[in-house]
Image 1: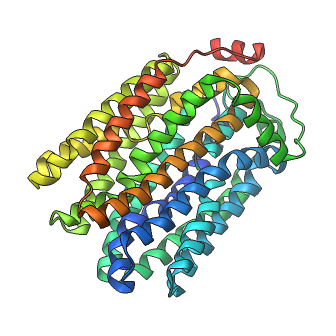
Image 2: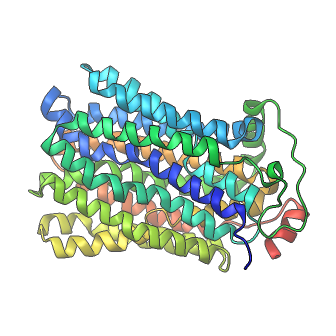
Length: 419
């Protein structure tokens, strides 16, 4: 019987680590109303902390990719999980809104931004030649799995025991993953005398010095191409329409229409169920179908679904809302595998770092819309304008994705892609 390649074990550990970090990513929508009730903070104020979190979550990504090249994935991911645990745990002592920004926004933003999707891109580059798209999809789905696991639990804890118990639960979950990462994750297959899955020979890697300088250099070079901007702007709209809008404001928006928060949280968790299926399938498709075509379809369908969401809220019928949740869930982060594939094809060996910058744009878009949507609700009394605006932007992202032209900079990478 053929033994299991170590790459699958490393991928499994990474999957669990991403789930642990995703716990706190699931909390903003659950905690907005409890924080509003206890402290009297406006949704715009609370959304500002979410925006700082999302912004740092994205801006850390390219530097984290370079740091992983310099110090290794194991060290960077373990430190990132510790930051998540510390930031989420200390929120139970806060008494002012600036503390929410410092802990929830800065510490947790730095921690989650140091791993997540850029971690998945780096790991698949090092450990997989075959099944790269599929594994990228599975690891990306780890965030959705974390949402699926944590959202109903956190909503129940926040309602029955108070929001502080929810924060402590997330801190404990992230902390528990640290030993697993430290003892089982390995930075490269060559470190333990193996080659990447599907590779014919080992790769000699030299730790890169000047991680920050390399990240900036890669951005400078990539920014000279229009295709980088097509990817970056499209992914910014992706973040705006998912993490920034639906991920942050769906639960309070549903609560505005009379839906209990636990019910809304459960519906949002259902997104996680279908997101797992959609993202894994998207990864499989990315190995076989033009990634540009996939992005056009994903953004287009997402835009149409957001344009009908205000009518579904007004109808207040759970069956029709469930249809939206299923449809939207299949498309939630299905954009990630084809975006990673395009970064790899266009920018070759710098693909993971370039994706870090593209992902940074994703979180900038999410950060802007998280605050804008909160302020919109404060001034207009509803989120309708935010839903419609996001829908139109997604249709624009589909148009930009259709204009991307791929080329491979590194001939060795071309051979890998064909193989």
